[in-house]
Image (cartoon, rainbow, N blue to C red):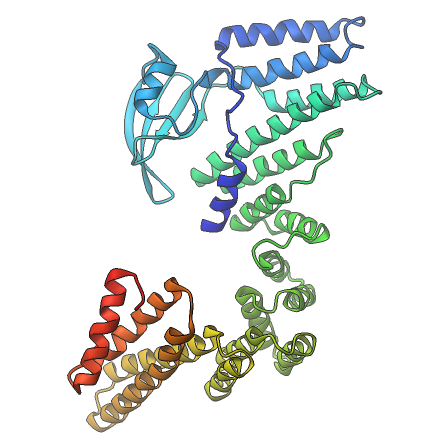
Length: 440
């Protein structure tokens, strides 16, 4: 969820930047006048006739919102909207966040907890399919402009329409209507791809696939994710490979899922989602998991000094339940690069999680002798996590990472703080780091 919202926020920074203040009635009349002009044979051969028609469609689309813009405060909107008052006001929750919803005759406005306008949802458009009709008008303008004298203006108009579709997609996403969001993302991508603009908006294509995947429309998601890969768009460390593999799996295309995961792993060996997908595929298919080590060894040959590849190898062993080999691989990272903290972190988390599992096992054991054995195993595992976490804390140069490591160490040392002053002092040290958010 978070990822797609970040993408959308970047894409939507220009929403309503060009909105013109036109009353709905005037906007509708302007469309009718422009349509009539386009029907005139003498005027229909002029570029200006069609660009004017396109602009009137866009203005009709904008008319219900007037001059209001997202990000405005309620006080600012009072100035922008004049005497326009809401019919009703209610508190709603969207995506887990509270909003104040103001209902007007032709639109709903949603304000966030800071009192800023976050979402504008037009409920009564002036003209149906105004943006789609605008695109058709721009296409016609390009047809009657063989010399391309107005290409720049036409392209600006098409890009403007694409951004408005993005805003619609974002609204539908916020409302939880992922099916509609996917359709609007596709419309935005199509607008950008329209001649003469001819741009591929891979972000919109990915989002169209992502939202289709969310509603389990796998055939639709497949087409968009495949388009992303065909155009070398992988999204955040190869996420497209993992998503497409999941789509193939759900469509019963098992071999295609394996092949795309292996291709993704070759390109992005550090991707956890691709790695987990590969491990799951080989374990569920019953095929030899040694293939995973063949892949990682091929990557090592290409980058023998890449410590992160040994971290990936450790993750593979961990997922396969071979903790001993996992720890060896994690520690191998430091041999390749003494300042690479993630190998130590991987070993520390492995031991820490093992301790948590043993603690839960002990809690459910009613035989006293067996309980005592498990508790000793728990304490051994928990103390084994200290060394790698301490080394990670020492070598890391990233404050946030060190604070996160300190959280683990604080918990561990607290468990043994009554055993010795040394443990108590260590607990106090890391507790202070966690409280202040600053590593010492």
